[in-house]
Image (cartoon, rainbow, N blue to C red; front, side, top):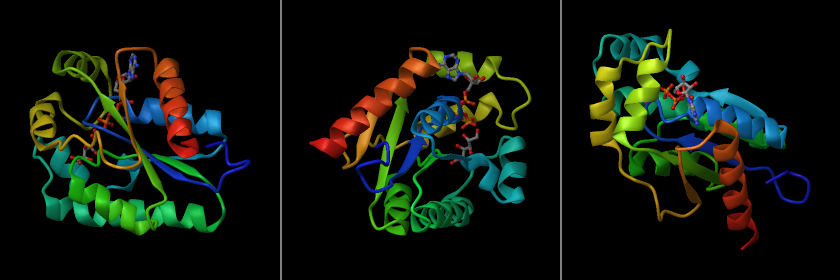
Length: 177
Ligand SMILES: Nc1ncnc2c1ncn2[C@@H]1O[C@H](COP(=O)(O)OP(=O)(O)OP(=O)(O)O)[C@@H](O)[C@H]1O
Ligand SMILES: O=C(O)[C@H](O)[C@@H](O)[C@H](O)[C@H](O)CO
């Protein structure tokens, strides 16, 4: 995954709100010395407004956002650069749309955690638009990606550095094997 002997890849750190996508994604990008893009920053303003009010997004709300994420990944790969992004990517149809945007050159790190730990982490977080009340909807919407090609699953019960290291180790094993 270093980009030295392999072609550059796009990596999406995915999971429900509060699972650590931004924290782990940043640590992974730093370790790989590639760009990190915060998927939340690519939402249309209307989506952020909805979530801030505690209204879950629909498929129609998410499609334009997924397409922006797809274009961002493709632009990096076209420049010959790897990229790490955070994106909830809750449904298989969303992941397939993202895969199609980069001709399949995409890996997912799925951050898995208990409802209790997610609640604790979201509850402790300050100054974020996403209310804790949307966690139940996020969990109900999630279609677990474990077993899909190019997916590694990492438990979030560890430090950010440990999770990032485990994710990178498991991704390397996928690329080599
Ligand atoms: N492994 C960890 N150990 C301790 N705290 C963590 C860990 N991972 C994330 N956190 C903290 O939990 C909160 C949620 O993490 P983060 O914002 O990275 O999640 P996220 O999945 O990007 O959330 P969202 O999708 O809602 O933006 C933050 O306050 C973060 O500092
Ligand atoms: O698909 C969704 O419902 C959204 O992407 C959310 O997951 C948020 O962007 C993110 O979790 C912010 O906290």
